Amino acid sequence: MRVAEFIGLQLFESAYLFVLFCIPIVVAQKYIGTIVLLILISLAISTLLKKLFYKPVDIKGQGVLITGCDTGFGNAFAMRLGAMGFTVFAGCLNPESEGAKRLKEEASGQIHVLKMDINSDADVKSVLDYVNETHKSSGCGLWALVNNAGVNFLGDIDFCTMDMYHRIMNVNLFGMVRTTKTFLPLLRKSKGRVVNVTSVRGRCVFPVASAYSMAKYAGEAFSDGLRLEMRKFGVKVVVVEPGNFGGATGMLNEKSLAIMRRDFDTMWAEAGEEVRETYGKEYLDRLFEGAKGTSATSYPTLAPVLDALEDAVVNQNPRIRYLVDGGSGLMDEFCWLARLNSFLPEPVMDWVVSRLLSRELPPLKSSTQ
View 1 (tube, helix red, strand yellow):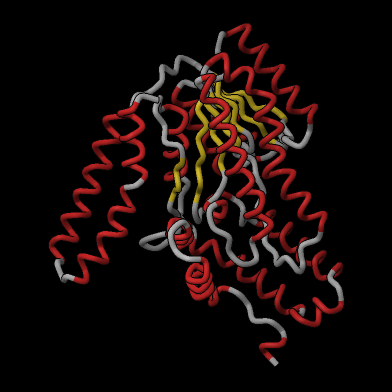
View 2 (tube, one colour):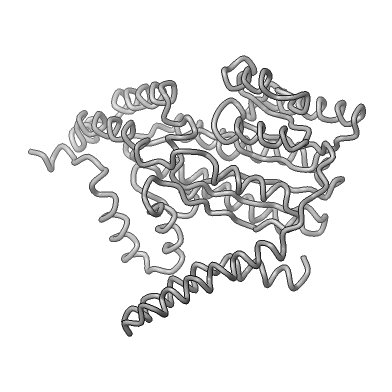
């Protein structure tokens, strides 16, 4: 990357820090006008840098492989890239799912719906063979791999079984690693990019989500190592970190909630007597009810994440990370906690997280007696 590009991208990434640290000083001096000026300057700089360093790739039917296209981000992004003229290889766990059928019905010939369980060596190899065969007939190559497939998970460490830990790591981490290693030779040829979808929870851990965060933190580390190793080949590695979009992705739909309910029942059945006595069955029941209600706090559409994914694939000079604010309010508190996590001392951060999330977590059995 050229020096000017590097400096520009770093300034863009740090724009919010400029505001974050300047505002408290200005408030203390009661210069309200200066606050507005600083915000306007930061926005102007961000807009200028975006335009200055945005340079789209020449699409011309180039190939993009997206995993996890049954629902959510993957399904919607496959549609968007197909409409833009990319040759899209849409990996679906179930090629007969409603999302896969929608891709087949609504999409043009630009989208190829393929069976792809990222935990299966045979499935991933089959998709590789298909991409190679398609390249022979069309010359599409493989410009980008978007590792989007993943599963949600909720549960205290005391309750999570080892099988659950293995399941979450297999899908959210090892599936990403398996797919990436398989397609890196094609990406080196095209000097393309890998786009890994992690989560805001890969930047900051919250209660009852440590198993999920473990996998997402590992995905961040894998992405960082891959980015440094791929520099010498001209392959870019980008991370997209969605905030609170659960209600819009399908992770809180009827099927997903049924899986969560089954997991909670398993947790209780396999928990030791001391854990049961400490928490009480009502704790898990209320945690499940609270999870069902979180869709109301989610961002209503997938658009912000799709925009970030598009920039990561289409822009010749993408950012290294896209932390995408979601939520239903003026700001996504999870994303802002993730930003603060790099700067606040751990005891302060623990207090902030506990205070903000205490209203969402059910009480223990002992605290209600």
